[in-house]
Length: 89
Image (cartoon, rainbow, N blue to C red; front, side, top):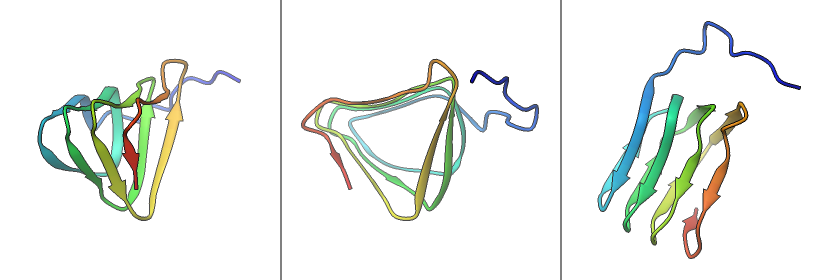
């Protein structure tokens, strides 16, 4: 089923790239993709992360971690791409 996004689903974060660093992401609506790369370590704070027609890509020996995190992918362009040997904790 293909549904249009609700007007209330605005983008809090756009075109997020985290490269070769440690970072903390906040819950919210992500558009344009999230790319975590180059040995980055990213903590997801507790909450709901919506990827609105955008991918979550973790590659090049990067890691994401978090507790009490929900990932919601909406739209045709949304997908997860974990290139080994990444680690999801």
